[in-house]
Image (tube, rainbow over all chains, first blue to last red):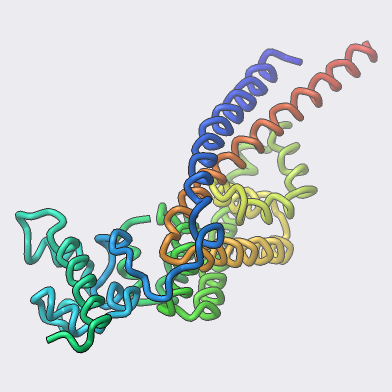
Length: 126
Length: 199
């Protein structure tokens, strides 16, 4: 083997081993997290109630669909109009309506979903 | 993948999935694998029609791959002028023409980080376009069905599987480089022995 070939072989093997080790450990950690989820976990509930899964990138109609609440009622609870905000993410809505309070719209959406789901469970409540 | 793209996927559906995958195949850092997983999850939630998303996504990705192949193809003359005297370059081209199909297939869904260089080399090495397209579509189909299927299976928890697959892709790339390096060491040692025996 020439010196140049030795250098190339060293670079390939060292780089390959470093990548495999780094990403292998991260993949293992992700796999551990996956164990109790999706097809490896309990079957998903008929109606999603875990509001911690609501993210900033979601739109109000998407949240309404995922949590099976009426979109117009969710807009009402959030106190914003439907027609001009239906394509905006919660992050964009937060920047528009609560520029000083980071995450406020997300928290309001979580509370509104829980409230609407509770109202549906007790339809006779005043 | 950016939050902006996720929001727009919700708003514009399968045609946007196709556009993002096309741009990803041209080398833009859009997080194409995460898009496919998210599209699977959105299909499970009834937001996208999975067949439309899969068909349009496959078309977008394949078109992007064909365009990056074309970039390599039109740079062929420049590459030939620049490297025609290099034995290593000629060896690499011959090797790609022998095993290029497998490289194209595997880089679509397993070692996705090196898909674009593979497209450019395929175009620049004179690898036949019809063969490229055949292996490309086969690999992209595995990618869309496997990654999209996992997104579908995990539904609202798709981000966990996206994280795992991103790391698994890095692991696969590392193992490929390691294997290639070890193979080259054996090959060069064998060559050196053969040369020593002839002299």
